[in-house]
Image (cartoon, rainbow, N blue to C red):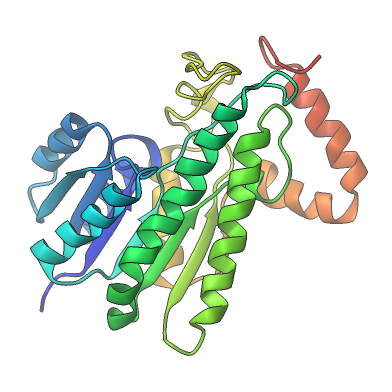
Length: 267
């Protein structure tokens, strides 16, 4: 039988890279997208048991996303799963941040998901396959100092929830997956108020969920065609549930937690 094909954006590091390794172990052929082509080529060399197509892609550019899907179809003739994982974060108070930074967050996190989904959808419908959006708990509750990040992740959740309903009778599976804090490069590459990268993470990455653990949980959720999944417990399920019951309390806790970060942008 022909192997299934998964397209993963943001595959050069973190959760995306871990997902590529997991799907290769499960005998899927891979289409891997990221801006850093050299990272994708290194990953291809590691995953020799399956066919891997690396495609240099900036998901904020519609033509890049169209090209990604066209290359996937040209190579494999089908797409079974699209995982919209590419994303960036930010760390700045709203009053200080340049609007171009907020626009960049939307271009990558939201529009990148929209573009890839738009061009992949006809092919995934043929396979009755899966579209996945990777958000975070910041797509359920507002994270102070991260207005652009939370705003873009809320938008992704609304977009994919609507796509799910539109194609409810077509056999399409849509999963919105929300990891909590996961060890990755996203905090190092987060944009500060002027659009430059933060460079250093303000959190202890060693205490977070590993990208491999997160990828394994997501793999099972996709396999079982789950609709929504909040992956972590304390900084995921618990805080989202608490926010539904005692929103004022969560606001206070979040303010204290993020204000006490090293070099916090909160006054």
